[in-house]
Amino acid sequence: MKRTLHILYQSVPNSSGSSTRRKNLIDAQKKLGLNPMVITSPFQKGEDKNRDEIDGVSYYRTQIVGARNISVSEQKKNFFTKLLKGISFLYFAIKVINLVRKEKIDIIHSHATFYCAFAGIIAGGVCRRPTIYEVRSLWYERRPAKTILNRIEKGFYKKLEQLSVIYSKKIVCINKNLKEHLMKKLFIKEDKISVVSNAVDVRWLESLPLTKRSSNTLRFGYIGSISPIEGLELTIEAFKNDTTLKNHPFYVYGSGPKQYISKLKMQASPNFKFLGQIEKELIWKAYNTIDVIVIPRPPSLITNTVTPLKPLEGAAAGKIVTVSDIPPMHELIIDQKTGFFFKSTSYNDLVDTLKKIISKYSEISEYEKQVKGSKKIVLEKYSWLNNALQYKRLYETI
Image (cartoon, rainbow, N blue to C red; front, side, top):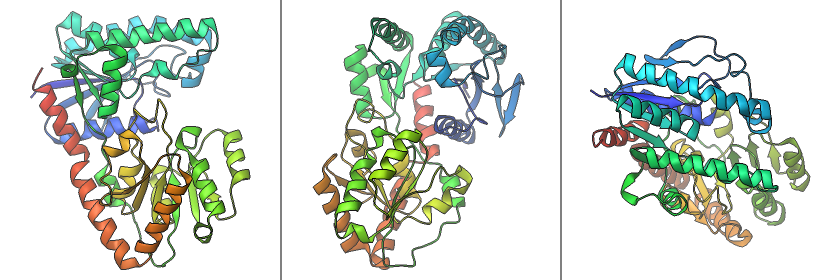
C-alpha cells in the first residue's frame, strides 16, 4: 500500500476547523488501510517534541526557535516574522526531503497554503515523488491592495500560488466553483484538477447526546464564526421585523471581532440572542437548542469558492437546514430533501422560506420525517470514509 506524507501548516492538537478536517481525513485514510503520516511546519503552535503519535499516525514536528509561538495574524503583519517565515522555509523543505527518504514515502500530499506546497514540490523533485496540492481558497485574494507595497506583496503571493499549482502533479479542491476559479485565475488545465467534497465526522455526530423536539414552536439558530461574510445582518432584520418570525427565538453560537458582534447586538431584537463561543465537545448543547439552522451567506469572492461544513453538520445532526443559494451550497444541499434554499441577500425570500418551514414543520411528526431523510442522505454521501476513498482512487492514478 502506498505511503502518503501529508504536509500541514498546523495540525491537532491545535484547535481549528482546518486541523480537525485534516485529522478526520487522515484517520479515515488509515481506517481504509492506507499508510498516512504527517509533518507540520515550524509554525505549529505549542509543540516542543520532534514526533507525536496521534491515534496510530506519526506526526513529525519541525522545530525552529521563535517560530512556533507566533500567531497567524502576527505572521501576516510583522516584518520580522515574515522574514523568519521565509528563512525557515529552507529548513522545512530539507526536513521534508529527509523524511520522504527515511520513511520511503510514495506520495506527497501538501495542504494549503503554498508554504506547504513548495516544500512538497521541492521534496518531490529531489526524491522523484509525485505531489498533490490541496487548495481550499486562493490565499492571496484575501490580501489588501490599498498601497503600492500591498499590491506588490499581493502580486508576489499570487505568483507563488501559481507556481505551486503549475509544479504539483495534481490539484485538489473542494467544489466545482473553486475548480473553475482556479482554471480562470491561475490558467490550470481542467484535467489537472480533481474535486473532492467536504465531509462530516459521522462518529463524532453519532456520539452526541442530541435530544428530539418537545415543542411545536420551532427554534432557529446559527453555529459558526461570526463575520461579515456570514451575512447575519439579513437574519437579524428578518427576526426583528416580520410578525411571524418575531415569535420564534434565534440563537447564535460563535465568536468573531468584538466590535462587529457589538454592532450586530445593537441591531438585533430581544428574540435574537448571541450566546458566545462553544467548545466542540459541548456542541451538542447548542444543537439541542436549535431546530432550524440558517446559513445566510451573501455572494463574495470567498463565499462563492469556499464550501462550509455548517450545512452538512446541521443536517447530519438531525436539523432542518436553510441556506442562501450561492454556488457552493448547490453542491452540498439537495433542495427540499437535505435543506432549503432562499435567494441570497433577499430579505423577502428568506422570510417566505422560513415561514413555509414554520407552516409545514411546526408539527413534530412532519419535522422528524424531514430530518430523518436528510440526515440519512448526508451521512451516506459525505462521510470522511467516502472522502478518503476518493483520495485513494486519486492516489492510484499518479
